[in-house]
Length: 103
Image (cartoon, rainbow, N blue to C red; front, side):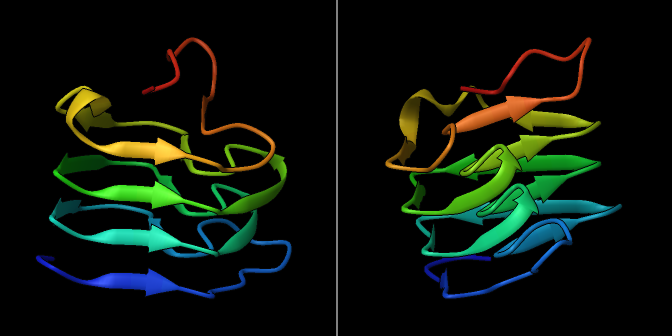
């Protein structure tokens, strides 16, 4: 997706309030994920490939982990240095062990 904002999604006890990537790949360019909620990955939950460029993940919440992004499997590229991931509760990023949180 390019130049899209996903906001105010609520997965309840599910995963990925904004985006639930349960297979395949998601590419975000100059886009935003904000003010979403889920148990894991309030903004984004990924089981596969997530690529982000010049995008933001802000103001999302999760009941357990990964308020912004929760990486359960797969890859998150490039490193989130060129993206804004901030203001998410309880954490901006989290991952299932042995993965390292993507930010």
